[in-house]
Image 1 (tube, rainbow, N blue to C red):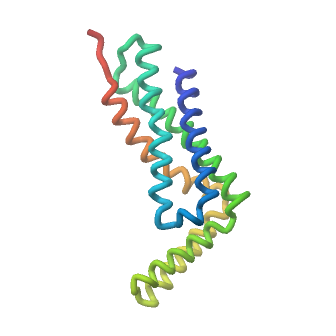
Image 2: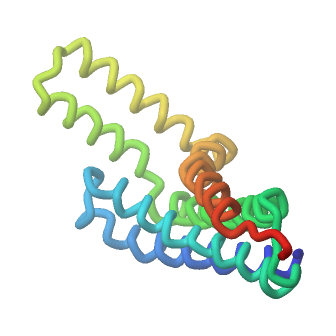
Image 3: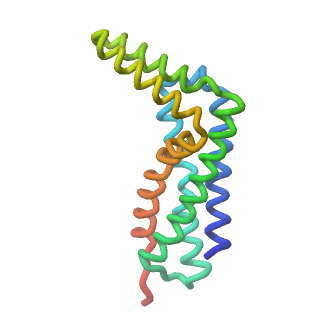
Length: 171
């Protein structure tokens, strides 16, 4: 299992890192309003390797049969490797190419709130939240933890679905 998990986890991580790196160079053109869709499209496409990894483990190592538990185990390990690659690539991009991301995103949040016609109290609350988020992003450990929460739930869902779809009993 180790070779398959490493192979598919690193392939997934490499795809997410490459796509993240490419799309961050177009961050201004994409804009914050569309970046969530682009980001999660990258995450989902890279985590498709979870399905293929579980299937490869079932077909090439276990002789065509796999339980949900074994499939989940392989899938979650692939997900974790991919997530660590995603976090690592974000930290490199953030600290080397986008160190003002937190401030820019905070300003975007305030402008969105202002454009929606919110009260000054609501706008001030969003401004404070943006400042807190920006400060947390400056701490590499908090930044990594916050970034990990983006792909992991998606990977967990894909792992559960893949393990359920691919389970196959002997017979």
